[in-house]
Length: 297
Image 1 (spheres, rainbow, N blue to C red):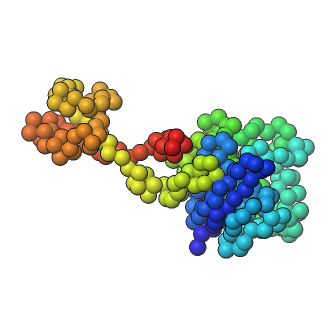
Image 2: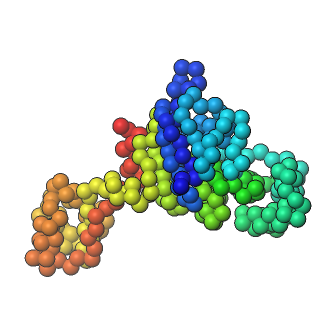
Image 3: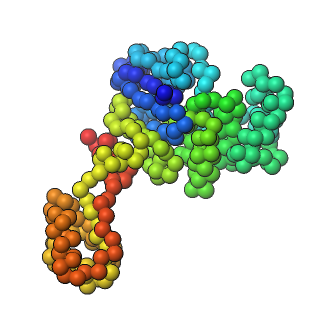
């Protein structure tokens, strides 16, 4: 069963149609990358899933239960893009406070706070939140979102304002959190998606254009580009003279399209000429290629 299922979701603000029949399925214990340009409808979708916005039409179910506007599903944890805290508290005090608000027993609250602070790397942090960096606040936000053991963790652009070190820290935490929950995070940083996601969806103009397992999507949209790597530059020059539409990408590498040359013809030439071949592979499309294809249509 999918952890999150969205069917024909529509939402407008005045005469601006933001979601136009969005349909999406997020498998259990996946890390799901929700990809789109700014204004594509990612945040609107997530706030509707959280019950914070009322859909014009369509249905949302989390762990098999229908989401109702005004009633945040008990299965969901949420990290906004800019989390806010009581700055005079320490991280430990803040998690204890959130646990008390959520009705957790004291012993359970203490144990869960220690576990989560260790997970996000703040177990030994004695300072008050007002002195935290942006990355530290993001890490505390993830701990807060996981406090009540949600089955679905929603993160809205969790790495967008972080430096490379901070981004890596957050992504590593989300990878670790997958053991406890299903992760849905919106982003336009495609390298983050390729690093940790098991599944993806591309959103454009309020509808999903492409979705599925990351590996399957790459296979489905695999192009006709091949790469040949040879041992010497002389061998490369021989290939370039014979196949003039090949494109050099390195000192001893060229690419070519199957539309221009048959793979068997190229490999037969390599064998007949005794060219020392190091590698021949079919190139998968990058997420950037797919993203540009979706957004430019």
